[in-house]
Amino acid sequence: MKVKRKIIAVILSAVAIFSCAGIVGSVNGQVAYAVTYSVGSKGTTVKTIQQKLKNWGYYTGAVDGIYGAKTKEAVKYFQRRNKLSVDGIAGPKTLAAMGIRSSSGSGGSTSSSFSNSDINLLAHLIYGEARGESYVGQVAVGAVVMNRIKSASFPNTMSGVIYQSYAFTAVNDGQINLTPNDTAKRAAQDAINGWDPTYGALYYYNPKVATSSWIFSRTTTITIGNHIFAK
Image 1 (cartoon, rainbow, N blue to C red):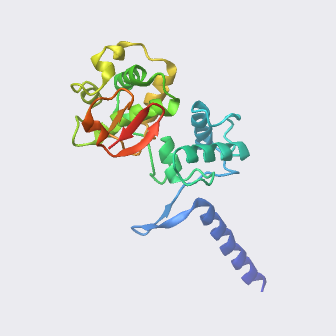
Image 2 (image 1 turned 180 degrees about the vertical axis):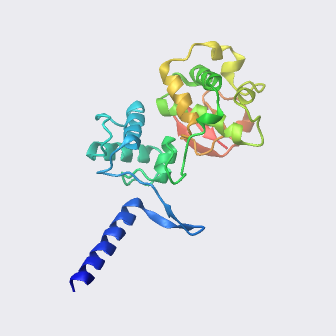
Image 3 (image 1 turned 90 degrees about the vertical axis):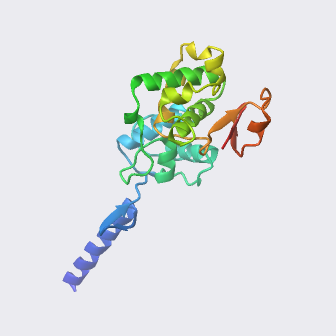
């Protein structure tokens, strides 16, 4: 009986460990995990979550790497604003929206594909186009550039997209030459890291000043501040 009880205890412990890791199936015979962070989680990724949420105005607590009640509420706030499932758990979709790479491969950073000059150029564009917008609105402008780079309908480089003829007002009127502030630089990095508040938008416009009938025909994905984002 004692041996059976020990075996059962070991099995239950293993199940508990696998449950925390979040097994979602297997690929080529290997267990696949859905990495999640929730109340009780600790570590550098939790610190990254807290710092990003703090930068974006969702979180006011300490950046201590401990996923507590305040972090959970901040994650829920972020999820609500980004139309994600609101559960306070930083799972693959939430991490991807934050531009954080999980060990399961969900989301992830693309920053290694871009040079410092690319990041600086995007910051210049964001500052010239959207310095009066909220932080999320500034990231959104950067996300449009990133979405265009990925699209076969646009150039596939940062400079190619930004300097495409008549693509951005800030390039046409010279505001791209203004010196970006730290907020624009952070927004550029977040956009490059994969945060896309626009849900794949390739265009944005201010309906108060836009005159093109064509742009009004595009499918709206979201409105952030003064800008309507569309595909």
